[in-house]
Amino acid sequence: MPAPAGDAPAAKAGQAGVPADASERPVPPPGVNSIGSLTGPGRATVEGRIYAVEIRPVEHNTVLAAEIADSTGQLTALFYGRSHIPGLDCGARIRFRGPVGIQDGGPVMINPAYELLGHGAANPPGASGREGGKPRRDRRNPGKEK
Image (cartoon, rainbow, N blue to C red; front, side, top):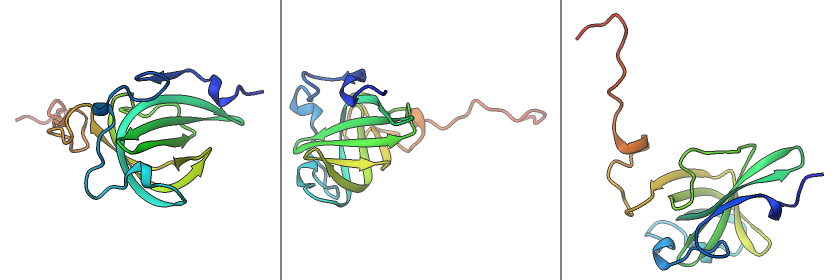
């Protein structure tokens, strides 16, 4: 019998799973929905900082749960069948896009599209989808000379 979801180990920032200060709860930029405004089902684009990541058991599988917060509220994103997503770590800024549902009184997204925005500045330099923001120049084609 799987353990209840609350028994799974979690990585958390701040106390009691809530971001410690305002810098960890960014103000939603123009063009995205504030998490606090999500009160019913629909589609949304939200942005926030990850404050908890945990693997939860679900029947014969697992779900990766990432909890984010902005200055208006908190949201849980669930990724079924995943145990890890590179870059989805506590402290990272992220944007989720997809359908929203309400579970246990809070907004939830299931398998949303996501965009990693970085750990620091609002728009980190080189955040073009490639890790580190640098093009790969270390590969060579065997047999080809420069």
